[in-house]
Image (cartoon, rainbow, N blue to C red; front, side, top):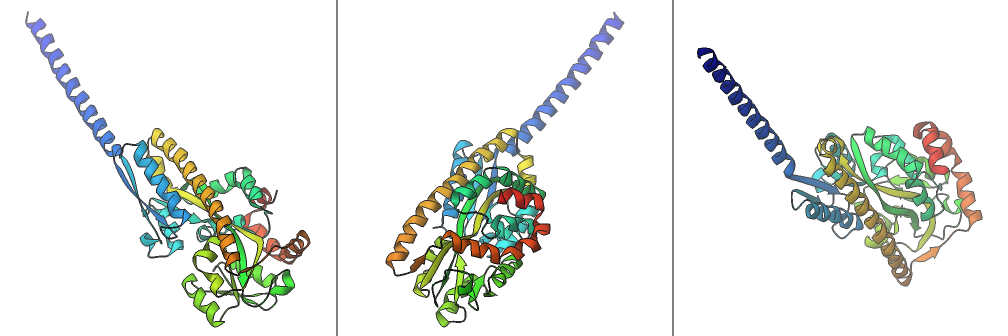
Length: 340
């Protein structure tokens, strides 16, 4: 009888221990679920709240909040407010996890790794169809791996567009027309080498200074996608534009990889799906806007010139030294993927 009571007592203790352990596990699991349930993220965008970049980011934020019933929210900050207006610093903070998501040009990603410059190599794409084929294929996949190496998970490619050249001196048809012109360029060595190869005198300055510099004649011209030219009203201080599609400017919609890896598989899939949709939406409205902007710029008196294939080939020959110098920097395989 005593032995029977002893057995019952032991079983009772075991049941209590098991119950406590189960409750602890459930409490822990519940706590983990509670933590996963709510995420308040911050996203940085280079451009203003009226830009297609911001609209694409806003779409992602709205879709994520809707699909998670408000469990995950994203606050989108325009004009690089999270990095003090410095887009280069923004991608560095994204890589470190101090910013959760960004929409940035691969030109800016060159701050992290020179290989990103391959995406904007001169005259590798004839048109947008060529660019789409590259970024939707092997080249885009290879560049995504470079993005991941920088602790950023790519969610989709956006578009700033082809960079065109404007000036207030003369119509630019071929390399000889660039000889001696002082052209403002992005502050990246590849662009300096490129414009020197074309015979121009490249100058770097913050974009906020460009309008005044053009107005005062400190520089003769500049290069940027149509949206920047239009929104900055550069047609008021420039007379000519050459639509040479010399350098494509893609965007990366990225999320910090440590953050992404910490998400559940369901949330990861959601970010991938909605990120791709948001990036595609940004590309779509960017292209729609560009057509309208070109028409308005033409009506405003800006003189457009569209080089023929022979003239484009002359540019390609002139910039060949750029490829000779940067092939080893970009990587032969990555460059071949973008050129093929």
